[in-house]
Amino acid sequence: MTEHGADLLVRAAAVHTRVPGQAPQRALAVRGDRIAALSPDPDGLDHLVGAGTEVHDLPGATVLPAFDDTHTHLIYAALGAQDVPVHQARNIPEFLDLIRQRAAVTPEGEWIRTTTNWQELNLAERRMPTAAELDQATDRHPVLVKRGGHNDVVNTYALRLAGVTEDTPVPPGGTIGRGADGKLDGRLIDNALHLVEHLVPAPDRAQRIEGLRLATRDYAATGIGTVRDCAVTPEDYRVLRAAREAGALHTRVRTLISALGMTGAAQVEDLLDTMEEWRYESDPWLRVWGVKFGLDGGLEAGATEEPYACDHAFSGMLIWEPDALVEAVEAVVRRGWRVGTHAYGDRAVRTLLDVYERVLQRNPGLPAGTLVMEHGGLAGPEQRARAVALGIPVTIQQPLLHDTAEVEEGFWGPARVARLFPARGWIDLSAEVSAGSDFPVGHFGAMRSVWGMTTRQTVIGVKGPEHAITYDEALTLHTVNAARLCGEDHVRGTLAVGRLADLTIWDQDPAHCPGDALRDLTPTHTFVGGRLVTPG
Image 1 (cartoon, rainbow, N blue to C red):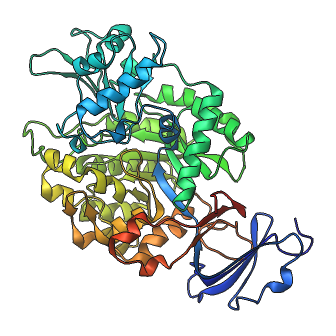
Image 2 (image 1 turned 120 degrees about the vertical axis):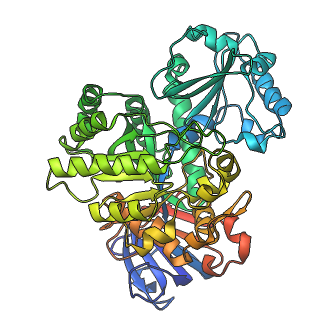
Image 3 (image 1 turned 30 degrees about the horizontal axis):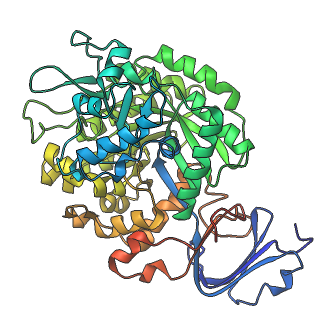
């Protein structure tokens, strides 16, 4: 550290601090992990330069705060860093061939896993592979194909290992798939995932740390300095701690410890006992945000008020009984933790607000931001107003809509898909709304999300243009509002003296980046705590 001077000095065309009312600055100095000074004169901080100061003289550059991805799945990204990259496949033969190639170099009997960030409608056949097809790739290894966080397809070997037969009872809140012939097709959804997944051995600690190093580097390369991972098991968190100790994290990580798959408050209490040792950890790079619940399914099973377009006898499913969820959420807040609950369809949104309202009534004086709605996908005007009145923050994920619009239209029809993630409606109500990706269902990326929220573009065109927001509003959702969601807006989200030096440098002003070029724009540098975490 430079004595009494700056460790880092950036001169730029504009430093957009995101401090309300402050004009762009031209120079920014960092000492340690904090911003030490700002100046409207590019040479105004030169007196802080010493022999050890790292100087970036970038007269054409734009500086912004580093972004948060407020709802993503870093753990999945880290696991996928070394899994079979089926997201590269264009059709099922290519998909199977990638698995076949991995099988050729994998000892018989060992599990083969795939990446999760793919959509079946992007395959030429426009469907998922079946167990029988996976058997063609290998019948000597159990195979786990994951798509997102709610869907698996496994081969016959895996079903046999798990003891899943045509007589296996379907778990409440889950689905065991069958083909047209009535036989098992390898598909498992939501609460049925554990039937097989509990058998899959975790990668060893060194592999997992390396996956986190690669994945957090990839997030940082898009301009993301903090990720809020919304499904972390206790063991995952222990691995994150080991990665932090090894210096392998390139982003800050805020975790929601997962209660997914649990059905009662007693199980949640056991989880909370496990979490107790992490309560007072204050590492600025890694900490527990709270607990994650799931109320309804994902694309195929989000709970809706009206039946699905593809099946008029089906309107999704609720994974929790409301009374049981009230008790479970109360168990968490009475222990002083926060709660984020997945609610995607409009029936789930309504039900979650019912649950949260009861919790608030029974526990007056809960700190603001204790209860958060994750997604709020189909929240209509009435439910948005109700969420604001109750003080419930919401996280939205435009990249999810972008990547899955065609899939979702098949289930819900175009009118409902166009209403998803109504950012304009939330902002106009002054809601506590922040933004993320929901990777692996949507692609992560700072400007990819901004581009999506300002254009409402999807893989099948613009959907719901009336819900578009401005560039400045989109930035706020990823910076100031995101830091507030984490309870850290006093130290992050804006570039001000004394705050953490989390910043991104862009070789052009993203505000003036033409058209679709914004989607793939990445920063030249991302600093977290004054440390360069991208190649630069």
